[in-house]
Image 1 (cartoon, helix red, strand yellow):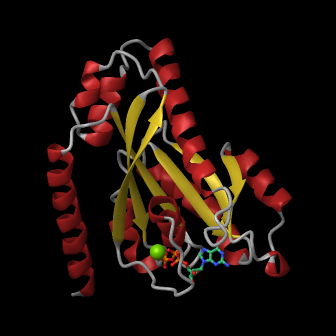
Image 2 (image 1 turned 135 degrees about the vertical axis):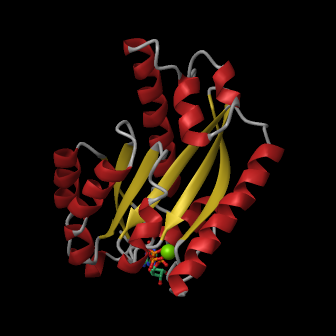
Length: 228
Ligand code: GTP
Ligand code: MG
């Protein structure tokens, strides 16, 4: 029953987004991004800090999936970010992995004060490989870096794991607003780099084709190049 309610909620959100999407065509590109990681690492807080510049110390665990939209500018292009905040709890896994398809970027988050969340990174990485597009870009994020006294995962271990998995790495704090904007900006940069690279190596893979699949939005079809 609870499960059905969650699926329904997600479907409603998608329908709602579809409407918003078609009514606002005022962008050059749309990137679908996902934030994943264990429960309580700070995914929702991270998104609220980025999108609304707000933070609360209350913990309200996410049910299913939610999203926010934020528009950024890069080289005079308007890029609309559709950012999906997933529930970390295991019982929502079937629902959340269904949203991996078509994502161009992932923020894979652990909590520097929680060893278990760091140990789970490998499994989350496998989930990305299993359910997402091959070229999806990933940034590993060690959140809650304001809690230095309770740190159990060193920055060095985080960086090493990121290197091993081929991901970029940031330590962040949603609470103190450290590296939040930078993480999203870097993710947008590496997605743009990847798009340009794909165009150079395989002209048949044009940005329009990718974006059609990734965002179901026809606008990028008119763009011969990423240009961002
Ligand atoms: P699920 O929705 O269950 O997957 O959890 P989540 O990853 O979305 O965690 P959430 O953002 O709800 O944060 C969990 C708790 O950690 C909350 O009490 C937040 O206030 C706190 N928190 C999040 N980010 C930070 C941070 O950077 N520093 C500190 N000190 N606390 C944080
Ligand atoms: Mg949450």
